[in-house]
Structures are given as structure tokens and as C-alpha cells.
Image 1 (cartoon, one colour):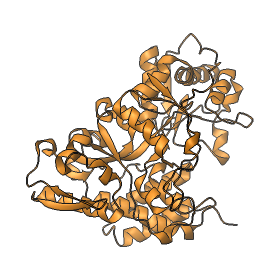
Image 2 (cartoon, helix red, strand yellow; image 1 turned 90 degrees about the vertical axis):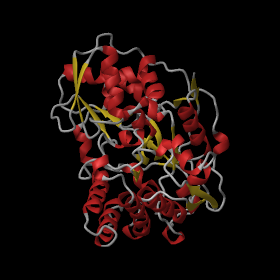
Image 3 (spheres, rainbow, N blue to C red; image 1 turned 120 degrees about the vertical axis):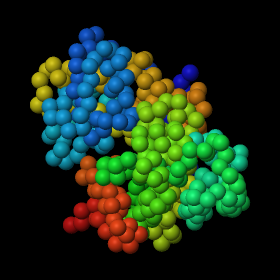
Image 4 (cartoon, rainbow, N blue to C red; image 1 turned 135 degrees about the vertical axis):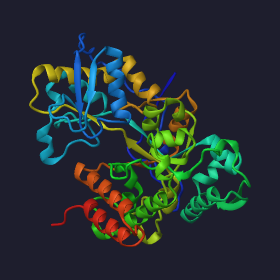
Length: 443
């Protein structure tokens, strides 16, 4: 059974209030019944998929589901020239729009854009795949084995000081297990004297990519920092403090990570095997990598070291920025410009299968645990129901970063990971370069 609900455009904690404004507007009323015509009967024999997300992750998994269901040979290459379908992290902006087709030129894709609630009075260059909670994720059984049943709420609501001390304590405990007291949300817990069986493979607190020179963080990682800096246009000055707080979160991962030798298989594999206690990702990306894992994980907000002086907003307070997960986009589907008719038809078939068929919708919400672009979601599994409940209770809305800003975020993280003294010169470089990249151009 699928649960239907209306998502607010923005869910935010009012400063000093602890309430999500507009929460009463959430309803269980289904959206209008779609009047989309059916997709073309004949699927293409092959489809070349490119773009920055044409690798792992939910967007690529959705297209793979299309290929498997329709017998289409889909090939994926992030650097492939001439791909018929592009998987993008954000809608193209500025001069980049000329690289893609206005999807309104196809009446079926125009209807798909309308179903996703997009403004079709203006050009539409990309359609969303869906949204998903983004956070640190843990295997609930492992977390309970370390701290005791019922610990999750206190872990989720820990202050930055408590959270960072907890990560350091677990790292020290892994080196020499002994009863170790930690405080989370003001409550005392004790790490056990010996490794419990559920944590037998645990090698580090945080999962990291096997190759830290690769692109990783994504726009959702800087959600709290951008919200703390206030409404756009944001200045480098307003961003300096929040970006420094984001740097603390990245440093905490780097300093308490799974050792390099134990990072094989990627983030989800480290979490699934029990080598990592936490992995930072979206729920949909975990589902794409390991469906069974995604159904047993619990979330912890991606916390940063923010202070009152970092806030240039009256919409969010420190509690909201620290204790709520992010609702992040899973990517966008776009059709490059200049393709022949056969290539355009092949790309449109994949998009329309996801947007108009029951099997395509099931691939998005049941298999990948996405909240669809038309606001349907899985409410039957524990993980899906928990996601729906959290979206209704409160989330932080992920920002839309340009491709250049997303690349700058990844590059800043890579520089931090590679720095010989990441807490010193590496931190200063991270703060300076990322604040400048995220700031609006000044006249």
C-alpha cells in the first residue's frame, strides 16, 4: 500500500519555538488523478546514459530498473559523449541550459513536467527523480548493542559537543574496548567492556569512500550551513562561520573513519558489513546499493559545529539545524540538445516509464524508497513509514546548488581530506574557498 500526502514547500523550525510552521497543512489527501497519456508502446533496443550521476545511486538505479523491465540495454558512463539521457545533480542553469532540450517540446514530457508540479510556462530542461532523507545512517541493531535499546532519540538529539565526543570515544573504545561513559542529549550511556557480537566487525565510526580523491559530498551536505547563513543572496562573510561549522563535521568523519584498508565496496558495503557505525548518504542511495540494508537503518542528523553567532536568519535555530535530517533530491533526468529523433525517443521512453507506469512508480517508491515527484511514498515498510513520518514532523530543505558550486564543495572536501594538517591550514583553505563558491556574486 502506498501512502499519499502533500509536502510543504519548506519545513523549518522557528527560532526558539521548536514547531514546524505550516505543519497543520499536511494532509493525507491524494493528488489529482493523473491524466497522462501512456508512454510509447515500443521501447528502444539500447539507451546510453551519461551525466555526473550515471554511476551509482538512486537516479542510475531507477534507469537500470527501466532497462531490466523493458529489455533495454542501458549503458552508463559519467563521461560518455553523445549520451541520450543525462542524469544531473541539479537542473541546468544559465548558459548550461543550451546543452539540453526544452522538454515541453514533447507533449508527453510536458504532461510529465506538469505532474511533477513544475512551472511549464517557462522552459523545462530536467525532471526530478524524487526526494529522500539525507543523514548519517546506522544499523539499528549495532547502535542498540553499543548503547542499549531506546538510545536512538538521544543520539539524534545530541548537541555537537556530545556528538563529537561520542565519535572520539567510540574510536578510542575500538582501539581498547573498556566500559566508557558517554553523554547524549544529557543522558548517560556506557559503551560495553567488550565488543558485542553485533559490533564484531566494527572498524571505525564513519564510512568514507575508498578513494577520497573522488567526488562525494553532494549539495545536501551543506544544507544546514546555507540555512544558517540566511536567505539568498548570501555573502561570503555570512557564510564564513557556518562553513567552518560544516568543516568540523567533515573533520569529525575524517578523524574517526574506517581505516583505508577496510573501505572496500563503498559506503553502503561498509555499513552493511558492520565495518562502519555510520554512513552519510540518502536513504534512496542506500536502497540502490543494498535494499535489505535500507530497510533496517536508522537516521542521525548530519550535525555541524554551529554557534549562535553563525546564524544570519530568524527562521532556523541551532536545535533545528542540529537535530533534523535533510530532504534531498535524488537527481534529475535531462535530454541533451542536438540528438537525432531515435535518441530523443529512447530517452523519453525511460522518463515516461518512470513517470507514467505503475511499475515505474513502484521502482521509485517501493524499491528505492523515494518520495516521488508527485508526492507518493512507501508507507508500508518500517524505513518507508519512518521517512514519511519524519517528513511530516520536520526536515531541512536541501539547497539547489549549481553544478559549479557542487563541484567546489567536492573539491573543498577533497582538499581537506588530502591536507597534511586538515585541522590547521586545510581548515582555513576549506572555509575560504567554499564560502566564496557558495556566496552570491556581488555587484
